[in-house]
Length: 421
Image (tube, rainbow, N blue to C red; front, top):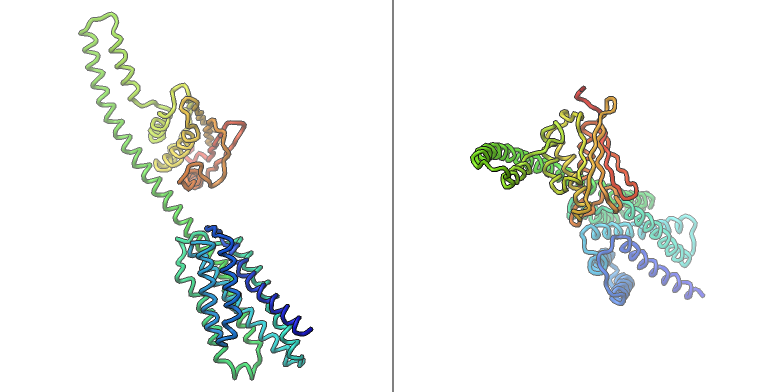
């Protein structure tokens, strides 16, 4: 009967060992789909090594090194391909080691305290090992699921792996050099040491998520700044070209007037057509703000004249810088164009008014899609446009509101008129 119980507990111990290792890998975002039979063979090999190595060599360091390397190879080869996953595997392995030693020293404390039988001690050891590793795995899975550091390019993985590696080295150094200390003071300090190492490694999992998020935000801010600067430069160049074009158009009109008088024709449709063409090259004045007028002329070229309704008369936006004008309206108008691929079905309404001390501008266009905050509807884009608009409005204590009614998408901008007019 004793042999049967020992066998069952040993089998359960091995199953939990393999099961927890798999459970941690499965919570890491999956990037590979290997064949089931390959994974089964890999985990059978892991279980065999976990049984054979301690029995053959009686060397904890060798067992730890071989099993940890094998575990990482299985994870990287069959489950994921990012370096961040390796980091979490090492963290798990350190926590696993700590729970094994904690179980052993707790059993020793119980054994010397109440003098239980050796067989009962062996049963208690297995039960404690299973309980602690299950609890630790559950906590680690919860942390990874909630705070998985996806921004691999913002993390220095090589440096971070030193945390679990040094934790393992410190554990073995403490164990090998503390025989006299343990005999004198007992196992309580070693248990506390293991608990502190577990807490430190779990905290690192929590902390690295914030590091990755911070790096990602810095990257986004840098991209937004570059986008704003490039857009502003584009419209400055466009304004210069418009000015040059106006001079040429003025001279050409004078030449046409002379030609028209010299021709002395009752009907001169050709010359009227040329006048119409020149009118199309000139700028329309939608607003008194110089930069906004340039942006509107550039972006509204994508619409036919009858598709545009723009009423911004009486709205003073001179308190907003040229760069911020381009950032806000170029992004919003780009979104309106991209939301309507079919030019024939396009349409846009832009209406601005001053309500007491607030300026409210509403842009509306047809759209049948579904807007998601922070997501782009364009392949290969990071959805920075609307975020850039929001952050720019915050500089002026403004707000952005999005409305979707039936098949109409509307963006409403509202900010205080700090110009005092």
